[in-house]
Image (cartoon, rainbow, N blue to C red; front, side, top):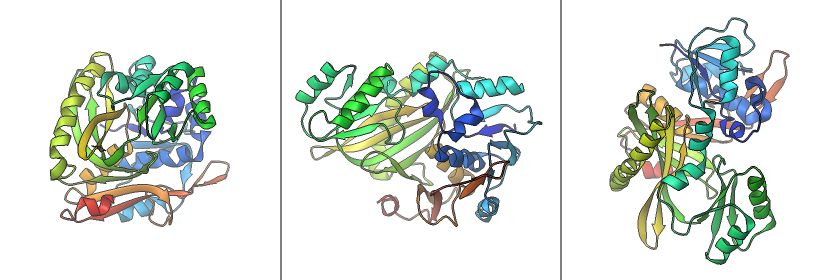
Length: 366
């Protein structure tokens, strides 16, 4: 069944707002959101309608077609004749709900309070296994106490941080920037997650879909490459739905740990896409699984890469990366144009590499 696809990747930003802005205005918060809204082109079907606030650069559709990616039907938010198709969005928010109601378009979502709860790192921290020495900090006294009782590099994380943003690596005491992060989050009535800094061996993410009727479906797994701060660099999808034979036991253990939490989310009213991040790290000399690093109750870059691999390159291994560089082959527009002719240029490109199914994933990951 055809749907309206909206890639509102400003989802985490909206989670932190006290009042809900208009959906169209929220895309203008940062140029990255204007560019990433075109992710919807990559996971839509040909009969879907990808809805965006601006037009892509003239060569954009040609680049996708050259790769064999089918282009959905497209419309701008300003269109006066939007189809009455059900909305499928990146993350379900009040902005989307208000937009749907205004235009009398079908849309249903869990309660906003549950969306905020399940997308907060506090939820996964409270309900999943923790790193040894990790703690939630609610005030300066707790922060000082934690610092005095932990050794080595440590990291502070805001509960709504995205892909490394909202993280601060501590190497000594309560540095001014760290104190600023803590105080800002406490003013928002959010705790801050404090964890020891560990040596990561491998990051991966599983993708799931939960229905209103209580069905929980596993969609697949992707390898993730993050930088030292935890910021997203690359996603790799293997044709074997694995993270390498040597880590198969960790993937199965991750799934076992994840399922009770997904059941809990579903029983408490959540339905929709979920991406769950995990990592393998060194504990001494032993490679150890941290089964749930965080829960994203929304679509993810992993789900986009998984859709592309399954739809267009099922026998191949693919790698998708978002970075600065040459833009001739970008899966996203190099610039966008609004109806008044204003051009917004984008500094980053989304690259797709297609590899033989027998190529070692380690060569691509490292």
